[in-house]
Picture 1 (cartoon, chains in turn cyan, brown):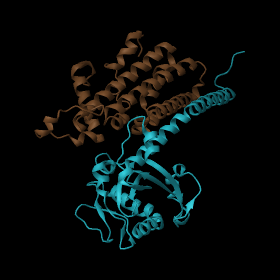
Picture 2: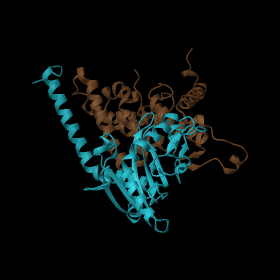
Picture 3: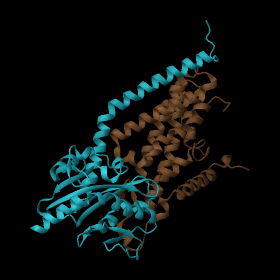
Length: 240
Length: 208
């Protein structure tokens, strides 16, 4: 019997069989590579967290370095209370979409030995073309910024993408979050301008105005919920 | 392509005389996007060679069974599956590069070279010549990608594969990297220059 290749039945069966085979092949690939991909993504996250305290681990050393420096991590709520769960598994991208009151806020505690304990807080926001994110390391006084790391998905190279470079992120070092008990996150302004918030400011990236503003908004949006937590650090530190 | 091409011609024509990028002007969009640095250009080239070779072979193997009215869909399904597999492998084994290439690996699906080769060659040729055709065209594409990538990285960042290639004394004597080279428009201009030189060498390709 000769099969009619132009018939509808043949076409339907053909495409169903084809799609089933392709689907099976794809899920097989995904299943067999999933662990390795997850490990890569985790290592990348650890690298970024360590970058905020100016540590750049060697290739293949990420996990050990991370475990060496990050001594503790926990989740708090915006009231500063500790929550159940693993901080590393909290997806900051989904948390920032939640109302401020119900966000889960991860905190990574980093012990740098003689440089003291730093608290690393993740931030996430929007640049010009896509998401931007970063990690802010705060000194044990809850106010002084020790270091920052910023990254982006697709900002313009040479303009907005400059936020990823140390030239930009190092400008935040030594800036303060508290002024006479008032919490004012660092604002990013155009070079030469002055912020009227009364807080600290850094110069934005020339030609990357929207990305720079995005960084500013991100800091405001993501650090403000940490205020009670940082405040408690601040007061315990002052008592000493 | 009425004349019967030898296997050697099938493989080597796409390198120069019938190059997909500079003669057929296909796949220009990805050339713009991934050539700011040499490393992603090489990985992108290798990925396209893989996808093109295997999709050519697969389509060629099943070409007799494909119902003509859905042949483009069938080609797309095969290409899309291969692209996703390549993407998954890159995420697992070349994570940093896969982050740099981001969506462009996925966009191999829309690369005109693929559909062009599948329609023009694999649908009417046996698997082995199709494989050669796929690898040949992939290499032709990769060749231009690597060329443009090295020119742009060398002049734009002063590096090659991330290593400094312009000596330090040049900078000390006032040499500066050309930031314009990193931006997409310069990829077009570099490709245009390559086409210019290529047409000059091959008079028969010049339009009257």
